[in-house]
Length: 199
Image 1: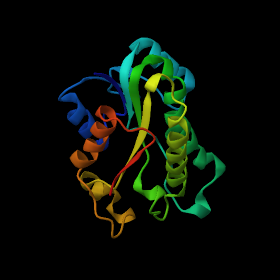
Image 2: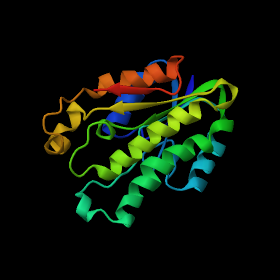
Image 3: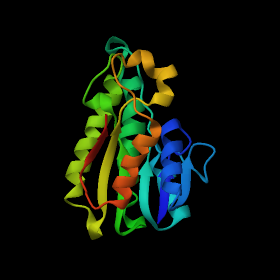
Image 4: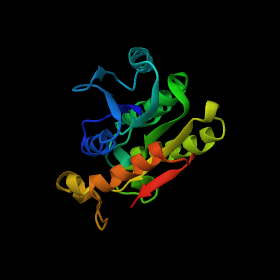
């Protein structure tokens, strides 16, 4: 398969790229260090990416910015980071990309455990994740030409515990390689409208 991957340079993205790259052609897109430079918070940038790539069999996104901080410090402007990046960015990848995905292809988006198990300071990211989950469920019944859509909701990663561990007290982290398997399941499987939890 020819897979367009947005956000292949982070900890999760690197693992997913390694997993899928064993059997598929991967084209990467992102703000830097990618095959195609693209800002997913800007619809015109997403459209330009698809024009450059042409048709693909699958689109995978492991990117999406969000503000982390206490609720009493969360302003509309700070909340907009998650709205434009994690939420609208991923949704626009689907809306602008449907005509560029082959029949019976797929989209795989990323949510996260805090939409199901909240942490202090994670309100904005949890909001975006929950909205993406609902979008995936609803969009699945209307996707054209047999195109599938799913999301993967990973736990905090073992490789990220030195940075994020204090925010996830009592959580049992998972290896990035294990989370990556859920993306393979979404891309190569047959289900649609699913949330693949890796908790």
